[in-house]
Length: 487
Ligand code: C5P
Image 1: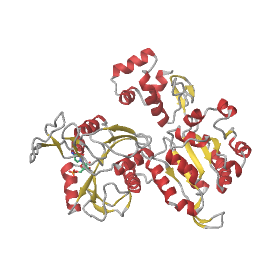
Image 2: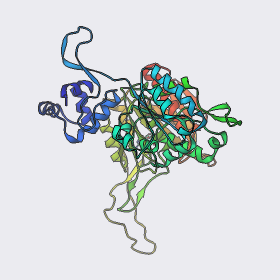
Image 3: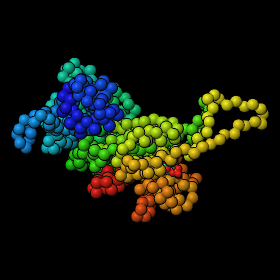
């Protein structure tokens, strides 16, 4: 393991300290010993991967080329420079009439200078042959999970690990369903389950199959976990019907791949902390005070930030939804735990406080179950105020560059939200009306907000919580990088 090169590639000793949560002497010790502790390997491997540098996760040996000559002077340099290899795309071709278009996709991927390995499902082989795919990719095309030849050449776990991004094009309703449910009964679905690489799906199918509630639910489920989708487009279909179901155009798929590759996002190199979900404030050993927050909005924001390359710490209260891919999740129960975890996640460039933090906790929660003592008897609870996480972060000496909060109000939404922005010293507040009985926000898939900034109040149309997260991240990127991004 080349310690100096790894530390350089991670951005220096201070970055390594922050990454591993250790002091300077620990890093000097690792250097002297010539190795990192066992527990740190995965974190280092992931951090290097996020910077576009591939190392073996077991040994931390570089897969990339290391140059000891300075590129400018040609002189031998004591600190080797890592020349990142070109991105490795794993293309999964599933079986649909649009499979033939993946041949063109492979050519365009190669034109970008990216490497591409392909997996074909059994039904894809009904439309095109592995031979033509290999001829264009220049690599073996993998088709079998239990083939000695395929496994001997490249185990399915290695196929999954070595991919910088996975693209499923065309993605059939079947492979979407398998991915949504975590089935692993062939090579393609097993690799999808064994990888945490950014995943892009380009669906192509009959318009009825696309519109079916099952396919729509699977897409939402996958989207919630951080999977990106491109298309389908609308138009005439090969099956003779008309509607949404055509594979997106190849140049559009290429642009979408470009955006999911690590190190390509607008927030690349930035850190973000997001709070999400409710808090549980114990009354005694079995009871607690909680609220109706589902965590959907906060989790969607964490996912969208990570997709744009930010390193995200998601501090989540107890929720029933899966942790988003590519995000470091800290699970907490109480407001005080959330407060401590949020401060531990600083410094950060961006803070989004989407959690519905309990305002009060029980002053001295009982260590046992409180018993009824008589027929008409009820204990009194003394409440104390919880720390305000958003206000603490906004007033902190390491204040993030952008501090964003939510204001869930039942009346006079804009005035309360405007006052809240000033009182809590947040940069932006997303205000939503939770008082409309016919439109519940808690637990719903949709949200409608006003964005309150120092420049005024912007009404945003009703949209899904995922779209809202994407729009918010678009605004964040514009604010912090002055760049427009497409999401
Ligand atoms: O004061 P209120 O609870 O209405 O403020 C809502 C905003 O403040 C949300 O962004 C929420 O995450 C944040 N908050 C917090 N800590 C608290 C209470 C609210 O971070 N204790």
